[in-house]
Amino acid sequence: MRKGDVAPDFELSDQTGTPRRLSELLTKGPVVLFFYPAAMTYGCTKESCHFRDLAAEFAAVGAQPVGISADAVDKQKQFDEKESLGLPLLSDPDREVAAQLGVKRSVSFLRVKRTTFIIDTDRTILDVIHSEVSMSSHADKALAFLKARQAA
Image (cartoon, rainbow, N blue to C red; front, side):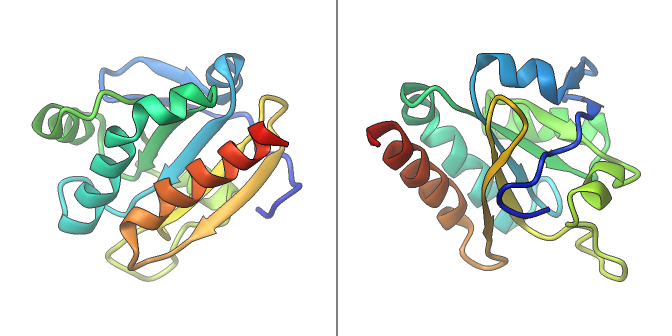
């Protein structure tokens, strides 16, 4: 998926087992959907904690970060509790949503490409951020994009 495309309206369970539909999440404003390869690994913890630390700034621009990985619901729950993330962590164990958004890896232990989608309330993808090694850049770039959009 690229900037300008319309994201599919999917439903996945969060870390509490509650089904979450993208269109429902978008009723509160844009969603910053960040794919991470594996909960409780060094890079994914760094990335997710950075989104957590910027939660108030995302709220100030009317957006909400939502994490997603192929990890099972119970592992997402452990990750949330261990790191006090406080944001929805969606479980995509079959990587169906990852495949729909073009971030599913065919051969890799990482399972998904570290990618962030900024999705507007009408499901239009406003921007896509790719970086496998700069974990903090995803939240920073998404926030900068949303601040610039708000100022325009």
